[in-house]
Image (cartoon, rainbow, N blue to C red; front, side):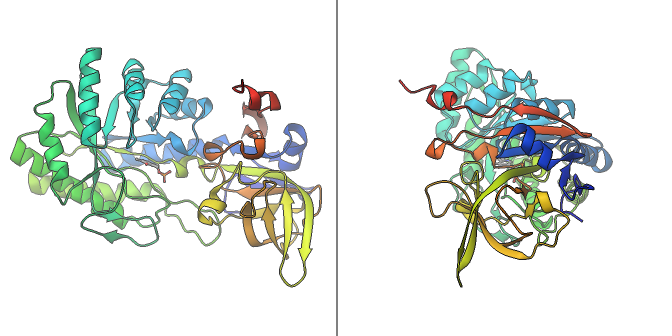
Length: 432
Ligand SMILES: *Cc1c(COP(=O)(O)O)cnc(C)c1O
């Protein structure tokens, strides 16, 4: 009935998540409130891990792209489910360290890692640096030398496959701030350059072709291009690259219009293409990493709000305002993202009212969704926005000095707070 399996309706007509009544959760913990279902998260992690066992002799590992939702509890779950971690900043490294994450399973991404971050990553024993550009390569080699280590590195490659939408395009030279271009020889020259560097050790190549992708075909094409490149490096430079990282980007369901494929189909198709290419070239199949972020936490999360004011503008539209907005979910304001909005207090009623759900911030563009169907929203009702587990809390801000909401994890009907609600005191903590 719902796009997300963890949701249901109870005898009171209230929306439930993971067996907990959302109206009760709102009463107990306040709103806005992020709620995550642990079972959904773990099941998705297992689907990815099992797909490697089933289709690739277990010769690979998913890394959780923690930028989707970086917090200690998610790091702990990723570790318990045998995932590695993809981090993009010193703050995400720090979060992983604080959670006791095994740092050798952490990949450090980013197109402008600072010297301080690189040093911190080395001290934290991060397993791999995904090098984005030549400036970083030299900086890393220098700092690794100072710290007396050899850094294991990967190179971020632009494979010339762009798949940010439902379609994908193969372009010669994609306009992207991330990575080394294949076409121009930039990537090849970077690999060549490592031969001269003493403090880096190239182990892997990486690509990431976009996000919220529903087709498997562009992933297969990208994997083939990467194997071609690994073979070229072996033949022309005699360098063996034993690992391949194919990035993330697997699509999830925000509304009924989205049709994600089962996540295991991905490794099923990609492994065939990789094995075939490798046997053609007579090279060993690489260890494969993938980096799902959104698909691990997105559908597992919802946001609860309390309805306040309502403004009917005749012949134009009806605004229903909630007690959060772009500070906890900026995705509509940023990219007009589609979301499903439900009246959690009246989940068994037909959604017949067409309304625009607005936030409480001082910005006209502070909207959660425009002209969407909700069942009779009235002041005091609890609204639920679905599939907000990814890129909501992690993009949250304190605009208008609004404290960030709490996050509750539910499991088999039991809620626990995994991130506390910010207080006004927290807001002035760094003011002097
Ligand atoms: C954002 C990102 C991911 C995760 O993408 P999702 O769409 O959340 O799966 C993985 N790898 C890299 C390098 C990224 O930039």
